Amino acid sequence: MKRLVLSATLACLVAGCVKTTPDLLLGSLERDRIAVTAEAAETILRIEVAEGDEVEAGAAILSLDARRIEAELAAARAERQRAAAALDELRRGTRAETIAAARAQLAGNAATLDNARRERTRIAEIRARGLVAQAELDRADTSLRNARAQADAARAQLTELLNGTRIEDIEQAEAMLAAANATVTRLELVRARYDIRAPRAGRVDALPFKLGDQPPPGAVLVSLLDGPAYARVHVPASRRARIDVGTTCRVHVEGIPGAFDARVRSLRADPAFTPYYALTGDDASRLAYRAEIVLDEADTRLAVGLPAQAECGTSTP
Image (cartoon, one colour):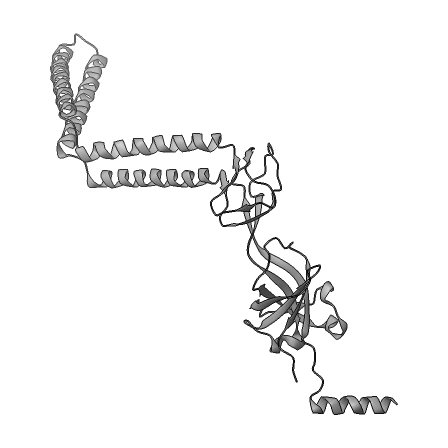
């Protein structure tokens, strides 16, 4: 009897009356996830949305306490203003009043030098007659040298003012202003991240923290689901050659009647071991390639993580 059934089956296959079923790939329903993290450990002051809300790109989600960063930003702006004023001063050159003051200083130092020179001559004459000690003459020599040095310094300062600002000084001031501008720009970008907004349109999947919490730096403040739904499945190595990017599929989602038309969006080139939930028969010990199969039309409210099964490729006669 068994031989008769086997013979009939083989005859039917040769005649083309039996078709093989498409490959069944196991996985789960997913959507692209966008995570927005905390810039700093600051208190959450406002939460504008709830989990499950649909938001547009740029919509306000929550706000952190920004007083600390605003103080840093104010200090950076003040430093930028100081650097700009210093550059303007160098570009305009020395004021006439400053040059006049330098000339007056030089005249005063010159008078002091003349007085010290006469005093030294007088002390030397008295010392020659033996009326004062050598120490007096030494002090007169020291005063003369100090007066001469001060006069030389005043003369050099006046010469510097008259020669004008050096190009190297202007370039240094320009560099300092550029650094101050960069600091302000960086802090402005940081400040903007204290008001959390949706980077793209999507659905709010998770708000891990509540009003008044102080999340640590780098913590995920909001998780958004974006883009079309797709089934993340694992293709056994034995079926890899028949499935590629662009292959059409039918995806069945647990609890949803019917099936969704879909196509393979991506297929990993590197295999991995088959996950436990996709273990079936002989495939249990084989490698698998992770694939993403995008659903052509699906309700964006479909729950992420639902079990999904994909039938890819057409039946073979």
